[in-house]
Each structure stands twice: as structure tokens, then as C-alpha cells.
Amino acid sequence: MANQITRWNPWRDMVAMQNAMDRLFDETWREFGQSGDNGNSNWLALDVHEDGDHFVVHTDLPGVKPENIQVQVHDGLLTIEAEIPEHVIEDDKTRSLVRERRYGRFSRSVQLPQSVDNEHVEAEYADGVLTLTLPKAEDAKPRSIPVKSRNMIASNN
Image (tube, rainbow, N blue to C red; front, side, top):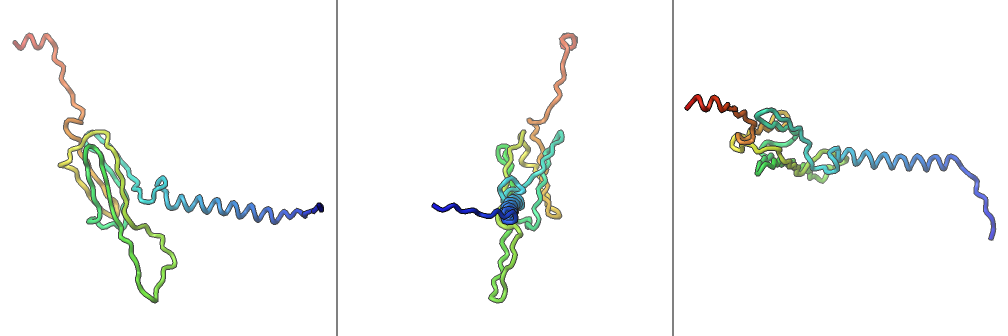
């Protein structure tokens, strides 16, 4: 068995390390760019706020036509669905070089902490932002209950 001596080349190791780091960052940023929404590219990011009488929900839906948005509230579960159709150029002389715009179905369901008055839910869509105003059901709103004194009850009789 012959002993072989290999000359160490620091540049080769540095290039190998650079390639490994490039792959790591490419994969990380590609995943992040496709899923700045926790890993699901068809997931809608929501802002939900509450005041004494309402829940207000905002979600960005740029490029979605209002007729392609569905909102449902059932048993305290809010579901928002939207669709952006894919735009395909079918031409023998044209080919796509880059296709990064999102298309397809997007949805999100969230359980509301209190029941809402389904009959009075309002949805407004302006400048690519869907705003939902969900009034709390009367039975879910906090109420003040007057406390009567026994002395007041006895004096009323």
C-alpha cells in the first residue's frame, strides 16, 4: 500500500465553504420569500383588533377582484377565501422568463373569542385591503348589572 501525500489547498476549502454558505442562504431566503407566512404560501396574514362592541379584521388581498372573495362566519369561526386566477400567455412567440406573482386560492380561518352578530357583519374592500367589521352578539357583550340593596327592596313594597 503506497502512502499518498495530498497537498492542502486552502483556496479549494474556502471555495467549498463559500458554496455551502451560498446554498444555505439561497434555501433559507427562498423558503422565507415564499412563506413569510409561516410555511404556507396560500396562507393569509390577518390583523385582528377588538373594541367593546366589535372585532375588526384586516387582510391584504392585492390583485383580487371583490367577486373572488368569500367571507363566512359560522359558530364563531371566521373563514376568508380568495382566488387570484393564473394569467397564462399562450403564444408561440412568447415565453415566460420569470413568474413570481402569486396566484391560486388563498384562505384563512380563525376562531373568534366571542360570538358575533352574523346578520350585521360588514365587509369592505379598498386598495387591495379587505376590512371586516364583526359586531359582537348582544349576549357576548359585557353588561352592568345593577345591585339592589335589601333596604331598597323593602322600602319599595
